[in-house]
Image (cartoon, rainbow, N blue to C red; front, top):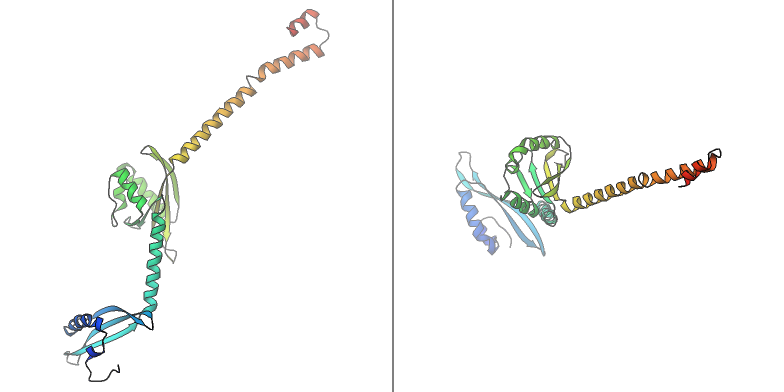
Length: 253
């Protein structure tokens, strides 16, 4: 259709947008500014527009109509969709790992956690972790000061990795600074991994090494001592000919 002065705007609207138009137009007639986003199929391609309904006033501040402005925001929406896809992909990756991951901001507020972290918190503390909780609430009272000091170091750019025993298991606790595109630190990533099986292997290797050292000491001391005595007696028999026959017989015995 050709748009013309004096026509009814509703005659130029797609059928599926008329109900939404009535709502937005009514709000604008009541002095409100209203902004919506509309997706349209143009030449078999999806195109996004931002539609702004603005009340229009005359010089005496009397409303005389409504201005409807359309803006192509397809690039913006495509970028938002890519970011959303990346977030979903990142979330899927985090949820596929057995390592518990929690992200907190600079105020210690939890902004993200994966399924492993949710399961671990429930298992160890019998709590349901929630976005918006203060991470200090998940630290035992006796470790709270240590935890806050560690967070302060990480927020200055330091990475902290420790191994601790607790709850009948061994854990690797890692805290990494998280930076934005401008290299500003915006929070801390907590990674917690159960390393009990790995530590048990390490302890087994340590015990094996201790056993090898004991065998080596035994061979170098207890077994070598009588051999050294025999070598010394042989030296006396071979190199000291002025000894009596009785003394040599004693050496031989």
